[in-house]
Length: 200
Ligand SMILES: N[C@@H](CCC(=O)N[C@@H](CS)C(=O)NCC(=O)O)C(=O)O
Image (tube, helix red, strand yellow):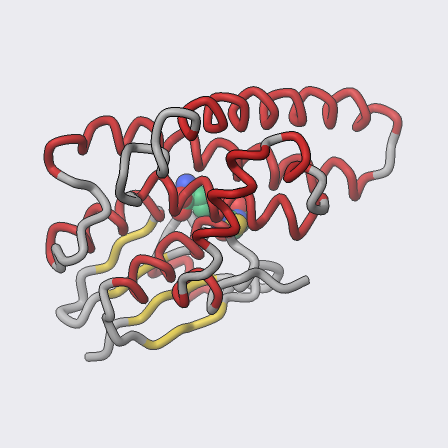
């Protein structure tokens, strides 16, 4: 059976997996999920009902972008995005990257409510995003990529979160974080990044 990726076009988590699949040159069928109208079949596939979900050729079914990323690296090791010598560090910092997406998604929901109470919550979420982007900016003062001189899952996770943030909140962050901005533009030259840009 063909590999299948259940995804949403704007999902930063699904984008991580789409980038990895493209970089590993793995053929797959893209199945877009309408998150507003999830089918019983989709919940049967993943009780969480979230995207991404990946089904491999042998029927192995995995949800959660991090678990899918680790699985793909194990089964299709080249190129590796979780190098063995720094795997734990990569997983730790991937969590930071995903946390930026978590706050950005929550911030977008709050902004759409347009209520007074949501202003306080938006400021809280923005403060978390700023703190996490600040630590990423510091990392880029030490090396070309977030974990050293080659890109890893951490770059993919932070880039996907920033792509989502740019889509929803605009591009102002570029002025605040010049090293992240430079790093982001360099990564945007890659085809796997170009073909997965979220569209409004
Ligand atoms: N930790 C999960 C997060 C997945 C996630 O929250 N996906 C969102 C789309 S961006 C979703 O499916 N939301 C639907 C819901 O929460 O019910 C991952 O990395 O895959």
